[in-house]
Picture 1: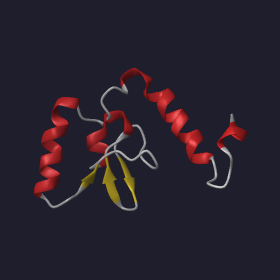
Picture 2: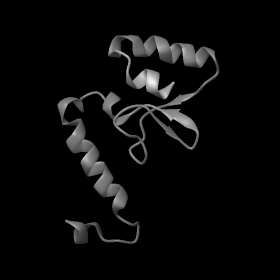
Picture 3: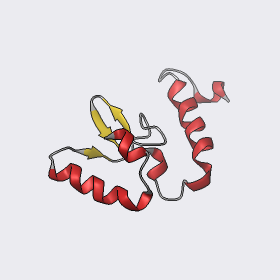
Picture 4: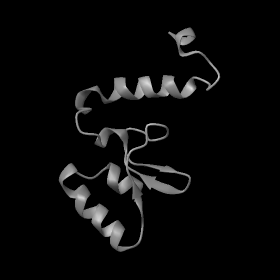
Length: 83
């Protein structure tokens, strides 16, 4: 289903999401800690991609690059050291 959602026109996605809900398949909102640009599977569950966030638009690639850099920072690391 992930592949279908990622290759479907934007207008048809809400209908497919409704079909998923009717089948009992949960779809999560985008997660900055794990989502990709498109729909993705995290821990065996379907998640909206970061690209579905309103306002991201044309800067999706830059946004995802920033998020990936943030994910690389270890919790015990000073963020200023990575600038």
